[in-house]
Amino acid sequence: MTRPAPVGRTLVPTLGLLALAAAGLHPPATTVAAHPPRPEPVALSQKDGELHVRVGGRPVATYVWNDPKVRRPYFAHLHAPNGARVTRTHPPVAGTDSADHADMHPGLWLAFGDLGGADFWRNMGAVEHAGFVGRPQVTRTGGTFAVRNRYRAGDRTVCEEVCRIGVSATPAGYLLDWTSEFTGPADFHFGDQEEMGLGVRVATPMTVKNGGRIVNSDGLKDEKQVWGKQADWCDYRGTVGGEEVGVALMADPGTARRAWFHARDYGVLVANPFGRRAFTKGEESRIVVKAGETFRLRFGVLVHSGKTDVGAAYAAWRAAGRTR
Image (cartoon, rainbow, N blue to C red; front, side):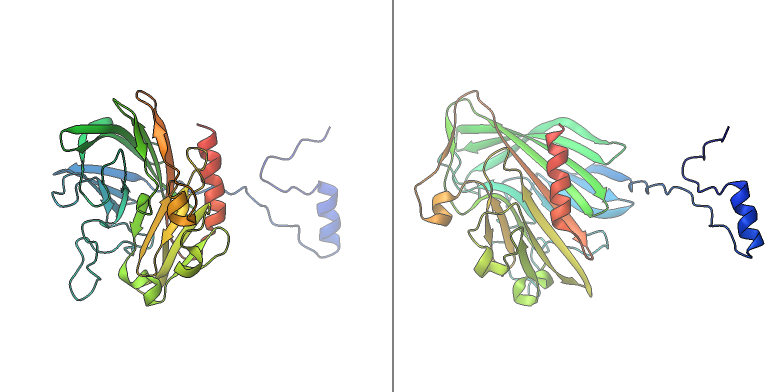
């Protein structure tokens, strides 16, 4: 009776070995099944109204909720796996960075120019950090935390948001999985504007004006082709310190609509599931959320360095979302 070969090894029967030896040949080398590398550990540390995210001891991003000028939470100082910063310095450095929209484009943010008739994009309303509903914790595959945000327009509470963030180190780069659920004490709406959704302001050397490139899932490039077009994902990439880096925004159409992208060569990129009229000049298309109902958005943010297949990363991210 022949003993089965152990998994991960190539065995040659004894007679075969003798025949090879007689012919002056050598048997094939023994092969051992490769083990996938362990993901690098994620660390989350809280200090003075900020949550610092690190992977393998290296900085990845800082979640901020106590900035008196930016009246909504945001991520600042996003870094790629090679250590390069991919978002504009916050606040911008005079003489190095363009200083436009300094308090509206702090790094990576979710904001709405018309939410229940109030403007939270331009810091006219205030998004109050109402506390953690899921404490920062490290898991086997990454790190997670969840916060409750209260959208206030004067004395009125438009709605509350529970925002859940997952951070992981993947073969494609650092991945932020962002899910936000909105409920209100009364009916409210998401308006049809250009300034709505998940936005990022890229580092100055990455801008198209400085030799960078915007590419979407349909192969369109830069502001002239990408602005106002729907896509599965859009990647803003460029060279920092002599190495290629990028940040891709991905929007899950299963939670709202296929996103339009507000893309500018000067360095801003926004995934916007709301702006049908703003981008197509068609009919206005508000999304109304009834009192007590929940409206959900899900985005992915891939921060990468080197040659990266963003399309494959998007497919894996969508598939992971469907298994929840």
